[in-house]
Each structure stands twice: as C-alpha cells, then as structure tokens.
Image 1 (cartoon, rainbow, N blue to C red):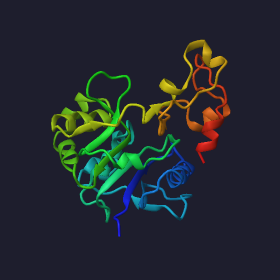
Image 2: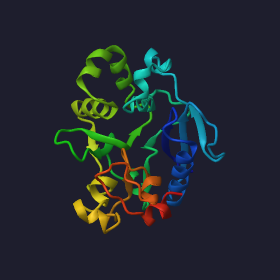
Image 3: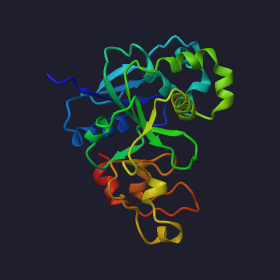
Image 4: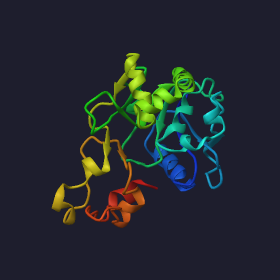
Length: 247
C-alpha cells in the first residue's frame, strides 16, 4: 500500500477560526488524487471537522515555544514547531499550507519535484528569502532549526523579522533551499489584482498555471468575495472564483 503524503496546517490564537481549517481540508480533498493525511496542529480544536486529524501544537523542548511566550504568537514563529522530531506518528513527505490560501487547481505536483525543502520564492525580496505559505519537507529532517533558535534566540531574533526569514535563510546556508516553479503559488494582491485604477473596473483573475493563491495580509478570502479591500487606496471588486473555490 502506498504511504500517504501529509498535508499539514497550524492554527493558534483567534486570528483564524475553525472555518479556515475546514475549508482548507475541503479544498485539499477536491484537488488531490494521492492518498493523504490532513493534520491540523492547534491550541483549540473546537469547531474543526471530524474528518481532520487534530493534534496539539507539539512540545519541542524549547521553553519559549512550549510555554507559549508572547513573542512566539507573532510573525509565524509557531510554524517552526512543524519541524519537531518526532512529530507524533507522522513520517515522510509533508506539504505545509497556511490557512489563508485558496487552492484553485490540483496539488499532486507539489510532491513531484526533488529537493529537501521546497518553498515559494518571496515575491518582493531579491535575496534567498522564501515565503512559507506553502512548503514541503520530510518530517524530522529540520529539527536542527528548533535547536538553533533555542540556543541562539537573541541573535536570530535580531537578525530576522519573522519565521520565514529564519527558516529559509538558514536552510539556504545549508544548501537545502529550493523553490517551487514560477507561477504555481501566487499572491492575490500582486498577481491576481489588476494594477492601479483598473482595479475599479476589473475583478481579480487567476493567473494561468496557478495552483494556490496566497492571501497574505488584507484582503482575506472572505473580503475578496465581498469586495472589501482592507485599505482605503485599494479597490477590490467582488471575486466570484474565490467564492467558488474557498469552500
């Protein structure tokens, strides 16, 4: 029997409700043909659908994470716990997907390219920084990142702004960082929205070849459906394809 691949997400605090987890699970089910496990690491399982494997955000031997120090709740830092070894009974290739995305096409291809760590190339950075809205790794392969943060916390926090800079810069130093093919993962704001004044007349479009659309910051998917931008200077017309896929 073929070992299932893992789809992993994480939810903490109150920024995203259980509906984001449930919709991500539903989108994955519609857009994958591989056998898979869908696992959500969380501090609150209330409202999450029964078909989803729910596990506590793991204890990793780093006091700040294990005791949920305030700084760990910001800038994606708790995502680093996905590199725990062991991570419950999970093993093998794992695709981590943020909650604030919309899947618009089949995602089997994310398990096909080789490489120890695949991630989105950050769209607005010229250095090696990756965007960890979508990344693939092997369970247990990068537990050294947790140890590095544990032993060099002050140095690392002074060096980087967030979790994705920490993760991708250190994996780049190790020669383990590779990126998804251009166009698989796109930004709603950067790649789907019409530029400038055209956003007043045309709704956002899915770029050809896109598989996953990331909604980093405002607008969120529900904002795009309703035509709310979150910024006075950015016009967002209601987007039907977000409503069609984000469910």
